[in-house]
Image (tube, rainbow, N blue to C red; front, side, top):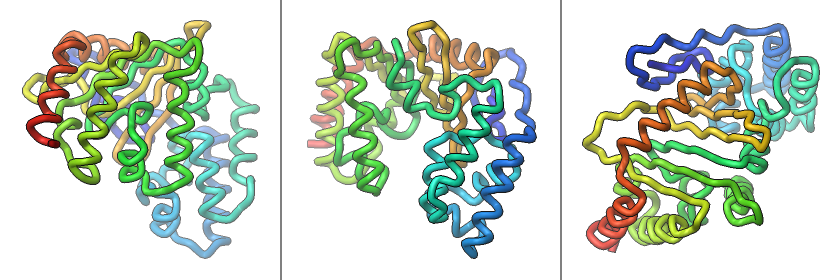
Length: 279
């Protein structure tokens, strides 16, 4: 099974199910994409150059400009910064949101994350963002502003009435060196510490088991029980509120939890990896 995200297949194995319908450009996303193209050309940049400035792939810029993907509001902010266009694209995206039937959280997943009652996240290659240490995040993001933003978002986990958080990490995340052994040791020790919090459950998906998903995703459930998911892909990512998409990722997450190590066994594995690999 795959989700069709940003006009391409994102592999999400879902035995026996049918594929999610492809997303088609709308007049609003085409209009937004045309404005991106206009501002890019005014700035004298090609798609490859804009992609480098915005830290995404050229293919993702192409998807945005053609209207085949509904990028997040924070990406519109990044484009404005990359193009030195003030708030032109943010204003354009806000207009897209106002003139459509999209829920308010559609274009701003961090907002949905901050107000959620519960969060469910699966990560395949790196530690879940809300659980990253500052040194680890700095290696991943390489940008002071982005690091500070990520650290601010992490207050979601420790605030009063914090959401219940369930995280499944692929075992390879524990073994893949990011930065240095010291950074990895600190990161895994932080995961162990966070797993002791009543509202945080961390499980490790062993390398040897059959995965149901190969794309990272997060599901944010709001107090009114509405849901929004952010699904990553190699060219960016997509926020979705489509009931069919949400059903698929929810079912996949349930199976991932069932097949992953127990929370207690996961902590034991993390301690073992710290001792044998990062010390």
